[in-house]
Length: 204
Image (cartoon, rainbow, N blue to C red; front, side, top):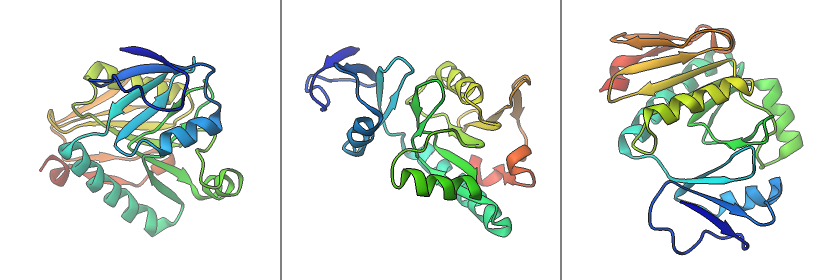
């Protein structure tokens, strides 16, 4: 479904998700931030051409996995104190899009700069590490395309966790996607070298 809107509200005739919409004129970055802040139960992202994609927030399984992964990453990060673990933060990327990963990690220096520059808005740039979790809101093909877009915009390492198949797909710049199936752990590298995510709890 594609909709054109002139007011900064969701169209009342929406009956299914996901759907795409476009404002005329297009929202500025600041207007987009305000629009997203008003959508308490929806996930809004912007494509490079200004079109908005609106989806429902993920369900119970994806939420539980997200909490577990966030907790493990946070504990690892606290030991080294090298960065910040962020949940559902929107990023203005270099291709003109705005996307919000489930979980992201950025070095502390970048986080401090963003705090000064952006205050409570969406930062400009991308995180070094991203974790996405496949849920009923996306098909596998859609999420795999999304992972490629993260890498194309500068993410150094990205994991796609599929709880239903018990698979982790690992994405890195200039390398083929690595698919881990039946493994007991997935090992961080690059920006999160030394992080180990034990998968027994994740798979339940």
